[in-house]
Length: 219
Image (cartoon, rainbow, N blue to C red):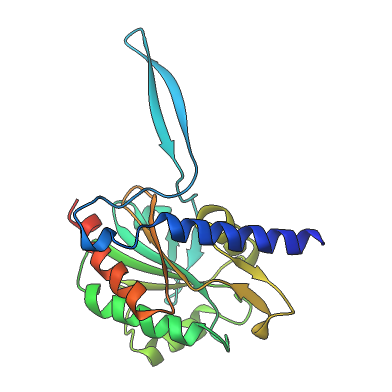
């Protein structure tokens, strides 16, 4: 088995692990949403005493370009709740389903000033800002106030997908369209922590996402 195959299996299995770590009953209860990903305990000195603090996995700094040609970076989402996903406009498989479901999220929360959507293209050579703007308009997104369709350096998009959002996002010529990615919708809080992972191809999972978003916005 080659390294590429091992990496694919690891990412897919880890994605499934994250999915299972997000309780299906959370949206039906008053339980707080979990913080997903690796964590470690850090020790530091305060007033002469050793204090321990838990450091949670956090989305790394980034800088991409949206459909209007504007830079969108980690400062753009600071203090906001957002949903991230990965796609490409010529995707012949799950992307159309994902965008139909994400459009439901957009319509529900587009007037909420503390909420954003970040959709990262895996094919930035083809998916220029101009093409992404046309794509957004065709599915009913008229401006970039809430939903940012992002393009940029392909390797950086792959890297942030795999290491920060912990989802599958890579080139693969054996896949239809030439890319391998999951259908995950990843919910991120105001501090850059992942608070939920949802199957963006399933209506009931997206319903759960829409129930969970207000829990973070209200904090």
